[in-house]
Amino acid sequence: MPGTGDGTDRRHRVIVIGWGFGGLTATKALKRAPVDITMIAPTQHHLFRPLLYQVATGILSEGEIAPAIRRILRNRRNAEMPLGDVVKISLAGRYVVSEPLGHRYQTAYDSLVVAAGAGQSYFGNDHFAQFAPGMTTIHDALEVRERILGGPEQAERSSDPARREKLLTFTIVGAGPTGVGLAGQVAELATQTLKGEFRHIGSTHARMIVLDAAPAVLPPMGANLGQKAQARLQKMGVEILLHATVVDVDRDGLTVKDPGAPSAAWNPPARYGLPRCPQSPLGDQIPEQAGTELHRGGRVKVLPDLTVPGHPNVFAIGDMAAVPGVPGMAQGAIHDAKYAALAIRAELKGAGPGMREPFHYFDKGSMATVSRLSAVAKIGPLEFGGCVAWVAWLALQVVYLVGFKSKMTTLISWIATLLTKNQGQLTITERQALAQRPVQPPTQPDAAVNAA
Ligand SMILES: Cc1cc2nc3c(=O)[nH]c(=O)nc-3n(C[C@H](O)[C@H](O)[C@H](O)COP(=O)(O)OP(=O)(O)OC[C@H]3O[C@@H](n4cnc5c(N)ncnc54)[C@H](O)[C@@H]3O)c2cc1C
Picture 1: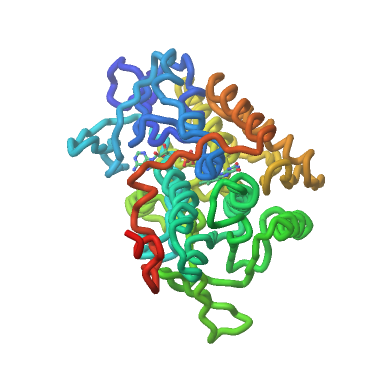
Picture 2: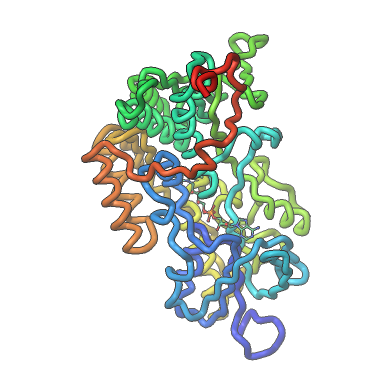
């Protein structure tokens, strides 16, 4: 078999790191290929990240967007899926080392597809993480849900106006698709769903703030759609602060540098979420060994055939790869993965790396949801917003969700939420509801405390 490299008649071994959009698509695209695939990732599910904030705001349950990978791939007899964090890649030795629960395993490969995605970046301010959860894992989404729902629960018990204000102020850092979608959902949750459910606080007590260092909302979608999204959020009562760089975050709030008034520090009360940025910890290892530099966004630089320079059998794809013209989006990862799988198949048939056509990306457009029945979409030269865009966005999510059951249950949850204006997944645990929030203790004892 070409490509095994050791003269034996064993099958070609492919390791796929990560089972997000890139990893899963690559494995599926190698269906019935004469290869043995080992997919390694630290979780047992495939996470549909674009719907994480729907979990955070109680519209969907985590199970709906994270089907078990073994269930998805149970009929792919050429693939196995050991759990583990890949901690080392040896390009020269052609093996990876993974660590499940303190054990170390070394696995050899003939072809490697690295699709480890992007981590949360705090732009060199890792201490922010202590106070500001990101939005890349199920854990993050449940943590944000806990903060969104735990705040009003505590505010209900407090008679201190300043403390109430803190507990009911939601600050979202980042006015990209995730920040905008989250802000819209939080605003709806605060102003519609929770209306009338509390006895001492009302929807008018809630304050939503979105801030971003960029000069516009949704910059990748252009000025027209950005303004549409901004106007919609403002109509829902969301305050939007642009040109606002977060320079510090602590228990009590965040400090923002406003270029309009450079000496001003602004400390709103806070609940947080910070934007995602490509920065995979595994990404560092590849440039080090390949003798290349990391792309300035923290991504791995690849050649036009998506391989690491000097290693035509190692593909870096998806969010962790810097491919000119390819956005850090699900469709980018899916395109990359299909190309890598085709290249591996071609090599098995004797078409070596020198015969590969360069990767070409076809942009199908992008969409961002703003609130219930409102989204913005850009498809080629066509730009539109509102309800039509929202229906298109919804249809796209359902098409890309993995598994019939996930598609059906997600659709039913959405329809139920639309009809009843009630999120169905508002559970947080007792520990979460009563946890110490990252806000200052009351300035004066609450009436309830006095009574006790
Ligand atoms: C909140 C949010 C909203 C988004 N909304 C949209 C949207 O609306 N539309 C859109 O197109 N895109 C959206 N995206 C982006 C999209 O989710 C990503 O572009 C896409 O997931 C990238 O796919 P990937 O395979 O490269 O990485 P991922 O899907 O992130 O998968 C990475 C995989 O690698 C695994 N992994 C990580 N480190 C290791 C390691 N050391 N060892 C082994 N495995 C590892 C992870 O567990 C995971 O399985 C959004 C992302 C987020 C976070």
